[in-house]
Length: 270
Image 1: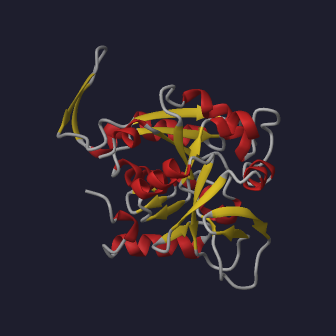
Image 2: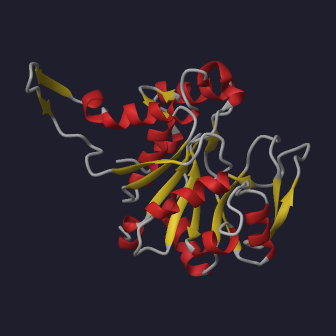
């Protein structure tokens, strides 16, 4: 295991309202919508933990209390326990918690903040001794090789390396020259190219250079476009599994894969 990877943190954008999955997200924020018995954000965290990353910073906004309740009561949800009631209550757990070494920071980043501001607000919780951190969205799972992503990012010495994936033809595409991102295009009629699938490796200097002057903006617009224009953005091409959960059909697909024991995003789990 790469020690530098293990010391890094992953920031997960969890603050949006998930309006395109409204019938589910009226009760839960989208990252808390379950795949099987656990929310999708847990699946994302497990994928990073498989590479030794145990520090998580969740950028919260909409229905923040759902995350607080889930993680504050995590051990109670996952283990048998004996509870002694009364004025001096006590709880005794049975069995180990596989996620006992996870460090989860619940960062309030504003109810309606844009993604750039969420990253900017949560940056104060990043490890001081690590230059690189990971960033992803709280609604997509993948079997991306995080170690390979990290190694490519480190070797390139750029500000940002994002994971490029092939989606359905309903997102904007990236314009690539080799492994350098030159710009972005609007939705094409067919998914012939790549899109930003999240799972990004970022140098902390990116925040000072592209966000500090005006945090209240979408990370994916001016900050990333300027980073690309500066030649400071690379891609890690991932031709394996990637799937976001943006509507009922995708919600049902991910749960069907999980229920059938055929979830590709668990490839690196132990």
